[in-house]
Length: 245
Length: 111
Image (cartoon, rainbow over all chains, first blue to last red; front, side, top):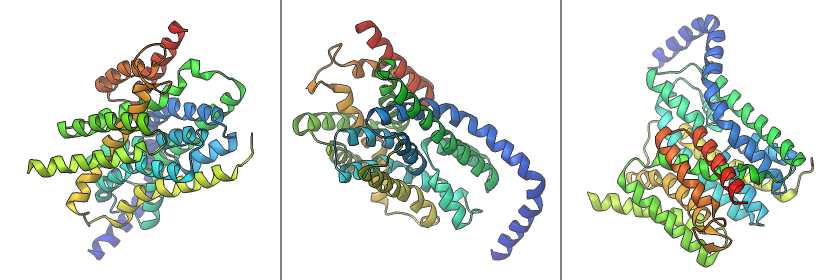
């Protein structure tokens, strides 16, 4: 086992020199669809963040550090609505909890990554990078780190760049709601939700959550409807599976 | 414009932490091990549950009321083409473009 590992390492080192350029180029090509996908969301985030009262620096900092589009968009609307830090943090946690499933799904393919590479890789694990990597990893075991990190770093860089562009645009132009940019967030949720509805139980869970959160928010207001309705709906899913057995 | 507000910076740092944990813990510690089956099933329903919970009020509530009437509730009507594009294309990029365009067009014609 150990022998194999050192052997693999030395062979990958001897191969790395001639391959490095090719792998970086490969990564660049594979990152193009992600860069397209990020544009409307990253730009809209920048615009909406400054409209919600964040500064350009704060918007860019959020994209650089948090790097999770849907939760960033929710967070700026919550912050604009004077929500507390606890509600912002918990909502962000729940919205981004889905990435743990993606992380678990990719784990078996990254046996050739060391702990620092894994730590860095997971920092840049988004819906879009997951989609590209999981397609790639299906075709080959032990993906080369230079290619993987080229994809991730370029995608992250693009996300921050679009945020800066949007924040700058939003601070110069006003009334961008007329352009429909505020719809980037619900549209993104719609796309992500459709991708999740792979069986009827998931559809029931989604319908329950849709109705429950609407009634809860209507009746009680506040910012807790997301958390409470998510926990209840996921528990309904678990109950449906248990009942099915 | 370039100021840093204390509450916002703290929010960003907390968000960074709670975003990084679910992204990294399975990759760092779970490779080879498995979560309890019940927890795994429960977690698998979180994405659909949370996305629907976020969508519900934004699609059905406008101006503080349960209504589907235009021009108050543009969000619901813009969701129909968005759902259609999402179902057909399964692409986030195209869905977001369809949503933005639908919302903009509805506002243009109803204004």
